[in-house]
Amino acid sequence: MQKLAIQGGVPLRGEVRISGAKNAALPIMCASLLTADALQLSNVPELHDVATMRKLLEQMGVKACVRGSEMSLYGGQANKPEAPYDMVKTMRAAILVLGPLVARFGEARVSLPGGCAIGSRPVDLHIKGLQAMGAEIHIEHGYIHAQAKRLKGARIFFDIVSVTGTENLMMAAALADGVTLLENAAREPEVVDLARCLREMGAKISGDGTDTITITGVEELNGAVHSIMPDRIESGTFLVAAAATGGSITLTDTRADILETVLEKLTEAGAQIRAEGDRIHLEMHGRPKSVNVRTAPYPAFPTDMQAQFMVLNAMAEGSAMVVETIFENRFMHVQELRRLGALIDVEGNTCMVRGVDHLEGAAVMATDLRASACLVIAGLVAQGETVIDRIYHLDRGYEHIEAKLSQLGANIRRLK
Image 1 (tube, rainbow, N blue to C red):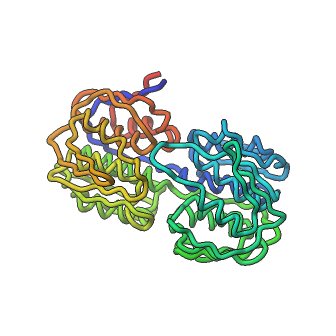
Image 2: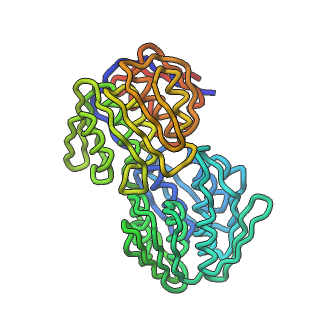
Image 3: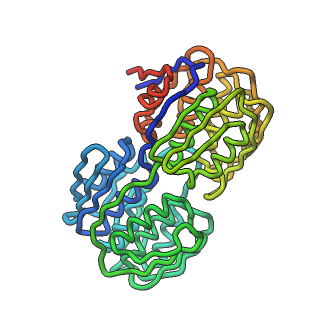
């Protein structure tokens, strides 16, 4: 089991390139199942989840070729519309093959997904949506079985906003017969990036980025060349790390327009931020100020940045409330932060965080992807050494994080 050892107290300084977004790359990779032509992708991050998705697609017959951050996916010989449990259990995003498989092959057998243990993320919305489009679905022995000669356009209203639900049904609708209307759809930039890729493949999609998306199905889709958008959560994580350590960093190959709420909160905490083109510069002088945070679907504050701001508040001046409205079990990092000296009280979906003068290094354990990032930031600001166990979560969502942090001056190393 690998660990990270961090000697804290060093302000981050310098320039770092932001990788492509995992949460955009995974659904776009699944879009390769919709066509017999090649889908050529660039700016693909080198992550464990991306490798798992590639293996899953290859198991279905998709031919994959990877050169650095470039990936070509050829679905012309795909012939096995099945996602087995051993491939799906570590990655909930694997559910994203369901819609494309039913749309193109008329059938799918997909294991119920696993992933981070941050709360229930039911696949009911995916299933109900496909049933509304005419698919016959039943669940047995832990697998979703879906069949449809050809999906039909339908009006689908999401009871709750679902990013993967929106993405799955948008891909399915791209090859359906007729018009599909997705209402109360997710507005996340990653949904927009998928829609952009699908349009490049010949799909007829409008309204992405709003809560109502219209898809007019076509007979077939072609291949395309597409560059994955920058990772807004990686961007936010590095900015919070710089603010927490009192540093001065510049992010390159990123976008400020998809980070507005995060940048507003960092400014409120006392950071000086300047955005120009694909670069964001942050400078922090003195101790940060506490900021209240309430997560909600995009364009509100992202749940994937909640844990990072918990650390910022833990060593900030004053007290703050952190409210989590998306996942009911996303405060598992609190207990670990307390081991470092953080003063955090939890009641239901709300945390009251009282800032302390300093955190102290200790041995801690990562419980999920973003909790891992939060503990890394805590280790960067804590006095002494922090050792983080179970860092395989980090490798699912952050490309070469210790190398990038070392580049910025952090004293961090991986223990085998």
